[in-house]
Length: 333
Image 1: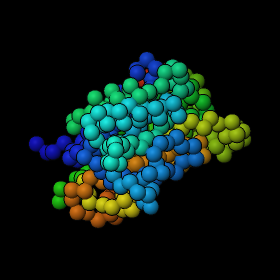
Image 2 (image 1 turned 180 degrees about the horizontal axis):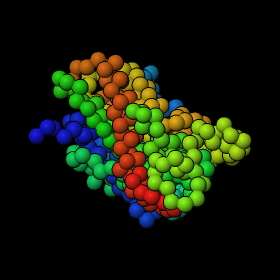
Image 3 (image 1 turned 135 degrees about the horizontal axis):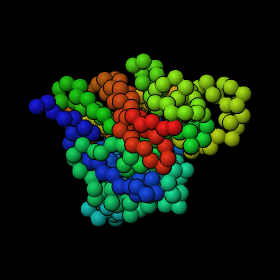
Image 4 (image 1 turned 90 degrees about the vertical axis):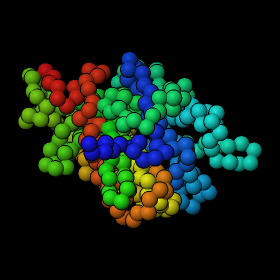
């Protein structure tokens, strides 16, 4: 049988989810307990992050020990504290001489408008995500950081669609693997780059039953934005949207090269989200390089964009209805 590739096919990478299905929020942890070169590229205008400064190429720390993706808006950054505690208990971290300090960058998305806004990912949930982490292919859809994710929100959350978290992985030959995981909570619509068609996004106010994909179902965020109503809405649009994720490879890259991979992976957002990188989004992509295989940075970066685009598509295609929002494959009247 052909090898089933997943992000956890990269040796040293484990992924775990934890979430609250009633509150519709959760977090996802990417553990790299042996350490991995870490980098980040942040392009949205409304980010929520932790420890991203340490990932800049000119800064001291080279390796990270986990990456956290979380719901809960800024409150959800607390989930990283639980991951730090989990790693410290196991003696994992940057050796300062007096203590080993786990390096755990994190990014959050805004899901407080779906489910219970008073319940957010906390340190205990972050710790539980670590306990749940395995090297099996991770679950997709309404799990972890994707539990309360939605897309297409220019007309408000009630006209949006349910999204989630997804992953993709590719073998590039010679044992080199590149993979991605993405939690998709975009302001804009999700586009199939093969045909340019909207597959999930803001729904029109058309009355009567419509199947997803039929003419009149989608409002088309780009068209709404340039209308009189859209221009008025944009002045009051909630700044609570983002795509967050991580691209991983077993390539032997330094910090500068890994940063370039994170930058190139942002093309995956541009290919599948319309519009992307707005002032209303906090689009943030981490990159990890575990250093096992010699590979060209251009090759890794080019396919990092491809797997990130695939992960975004899988995030919406694997989502299920929740919080009153439909998902791909459902009908709403």
